[in-house]
Image (cartoon, rainbow, N blue to C red; front, side):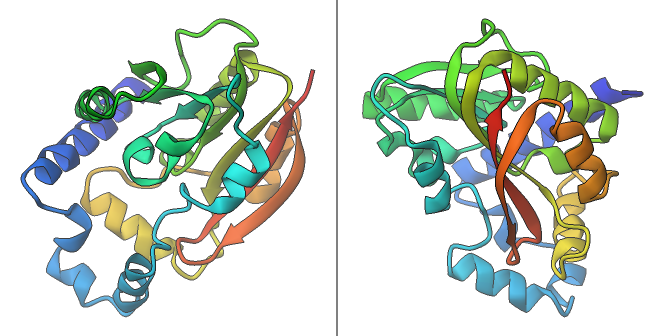
Length: 236
């Protein structure tokens, strides 16, 4: 957990910049440094983007597993713009988003007000310390987030997720696939934006921690972005 506050600040600033650029019509991923566009894996990266495979947040498997219902509270940790671009605004459950980026939360509030969405809360803060009560959520997700953090912090996040979920509730999260062919390039991309991978565990080490809090229903490798997605059930 050493220097975690400065690291959290750097990630927040990185996403704040991305939102500000987006408001001006600039997609950060379409304006990569020249050395990345010359990388052999750049073509695969662009192909994934063109086919909508550059993010694993909007996969239909997530909704199918979580089965959002009208009376369910759904927490999206490290939410980014899932509510806007990954179909979460169409879910019947009540949406709660947490993100460390002030600009992200500001944009989501504008979006939800404009669309008159049923939103429980949009909270700006770190996902390891949330404002919610114990056993509050029926379902949840944390996608494209844990790769930025080291083991001690990841464990704190898992403890917090376990705390705010109801017993036996369902949750989806992902971690980087270090052996995946796109992992190195994806890290180069994120590093160029000021948010490099810090995840320092193998799948086996991660699962050893994970199993203290959750049962693993299934795991799936997402080759296009070299991530491993976990479908989980919270232990009592």
